[in-house]
Length: 350
Image (tube, rainbow, N blue to C red):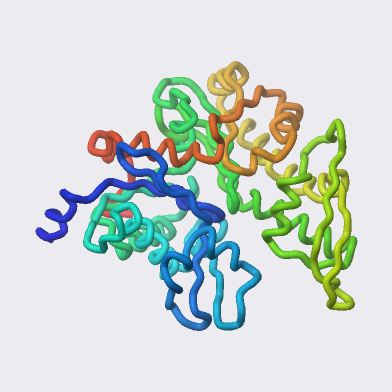
């Protein structure tokens, strides 16, 4: 215990936006230092992570769907929640060592983001995984609160602010006032659900099988939520579901937009539900201030305009929507001793 405290004096406080698709690591006084896909490569059938530099992050993601039988690329988080504790610990331990120049004996304080509706069991799982990865103290903050801070919203005031964070595995929608969440929802329809819709479209309409990375590329390159002034097209490569041979087809943005319609309107329906649950005074604030959009999913072409059209409220992008949560975590890290009483920690009785 004493050794841990002494080591902690030489450790750097860290924050992690632990996402289903990507994880971002920020460091006290230095901002965001690491942005890597949340993927770990292991020897199949074992818990052995491959050579560290090639086992976690972008290189491991590039292996996804391309590994030989002896290697398996694993996403340790699913729908914003830890699905594989050991791989999550390996990923967090890697981040800690990377920040501390590969030294293994550092024991930092760690601040992690979690979905707003995470259960007590899910919160404890995150805390215990971080502790086993080498964290001296662990603190948690709900993603919408961190996103609000990182977006520059004055969430500490007695005024309503609405944050919509569309990530890879989950969408977080919250109305925040006086630095706390008044009403919120977290649900498992986000960027990955859009990729799945594209994947199913290709199989149903073209009898062609594609991987998750290819589906994501289609979404990024030609995906949209509203008609485009000039519709786009792309050649897609995959495997014929009947013949089993490689094949390519050309798809356009019109059909991909139609494929994305279901997940998009599921998100819009949840936004409407939150607005219906919001009190009249806060609703008046939202009418003036609108909604702040963050997370990679909001970058889908025209999604902001469709949300504005369907809700009647103004929409605004956070500066750099992809890093809003991580930047909010970074702001808290700068004054962690002051704010830690307002955060959940491993010492709390869940």
